[in-house]
Image (cartoon, rainbow, N blue to C red):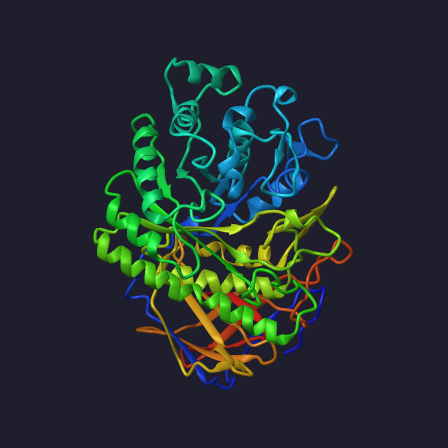
Length: 512
C-alpha cells in the first residue's frame, strides 16, 4: 500500500488477501448502551484567540460572518455536527460575571483576563452571543457557573435571566437585550476545577458548597438543565467518591479532567512537532491511561449510584504540549499533527466502551487552543488532523454500541514502553448501518486485521482512512491538505473482511 500526499487515495483489499494475525469480532446480536452524541462535545473558553478572532469577529467585520461569528468556521464546525458547546470556561468561568456580558457591546466593561495571558477581555461575547453560536451550530448548551468569585445569587439570577418566561425584571431585561423567548440551557456546572484554579478546595468543602448552590439555582418546570458538579482529575477519584456519596439531589453528572502530556511533566511537556518516537509512544501510553481512570471512577459510581442516574462527564481532555515559539504562553496555542488525530480516535474508542456512564466529553478546545479542531490566522483557516478524526467518527453520535473482541493483538514497543497496537470500536448507527473504527498505534508498521461479524457474514466495507508519512505530519496555511482522510474500501472472502490498517492510521468504515 502506498500513501500519496495531497490526493484522494482509495485503498481496496480484494478477495483472497492474506488474513492478518489480529482478529476483531463484532457481535451485532448483543447491542449495548447508546453512545451519547455529547461524547463528541466541544469546549470554547475565553482564552487566547480561541473565541476572539478565531471564531468571533463581530457583526461589523469585513470577514464574512453571521451575527458576528465567522462563516468559514461555522461551516466547518457544522460538518462535525457539533452536538454540544461548553462555555465560558474552564478557569475563566470562575472569574466571569455574566452581567458584564449583556447589553450594548460598546458599553460593556473591559476587564483583564488574569487567567489567560493578562490581555483585555472586552466582554463582546456574552450570554446572547454564545446562544447565537449554539443555535447557528444546532448544538446543545453547557454553561459553566462562577462559584469561585461569584455567588449563589449571581448563578441563580443568571439562570433566571436565561430561562424565565415570566414578566420578572430579569426576564424583561433579557427581552430588552433582544431575546424574547428564554434560552435553552441543557447543562449547567457549578464551578470548575474546584481542586485547583476554581478555588483550591477539598472534596468535602466543595460538596457542601455544591449542595447549597444547586438548591438555589432554579429554572421553570420543563426547562431545568442537567446539573454538573466539579469533579477530580488524573488518578484522583476522591471527588467522585465524596460527591456521589453525599449529594442525593440536583446532580446529573460529575466532571473529570485529564490531559495527555508526552513527558508526563507539566514544566516541560514536549513539542507538538519535531518530537522523537519516544514521545510518540509515551503519548500513546499516557492517553490510554484514561481508560483505567474511567474504570476506577465508574466502579465508585456503581457502588454509590446503582440506579446510574449520575453521568461521568470528561468535560476537559486532549493533548497539551509546550506552546509554539513566539506565541503568548497564556494563549496555549499549539500545532496539531497526525499524532493528535490518533490520540483523539483512541479516546473515542475508550469513551464508547464506557458509554453507560460517560455521557459527555468536551475536547479542549474548538479553535486555536490546545488540541483544536481549527487553526486560524486572521482571515485564513485550516482544518487540523483532529478535526478530520471527529468528522470520520460522526456516525457514532447516538449510535448503539456493539460488543467488540480483539484476539491476537500485538504490542507496539519501544524500549521499556509497550502499548496495544490495535484499538477497535463498533456501533449500529442511527441510520441502521454497522460502523467499525480501527486505530493502529504503531508509527512504523501496517497491521492486517481480520474482521468477523458474529452470526453473519461480512460482505464489504466502505469508509475512510487517515494517515500520513510522518509522525508529526500537520497542516499549514501554505499546505492545508497535508493530512486529510482518503477513501477506503475492503472486500470480504469467506464472510470475513481483511483490513490493512496503515501505520499510525485511523480507519472508520461501514461494514455491510
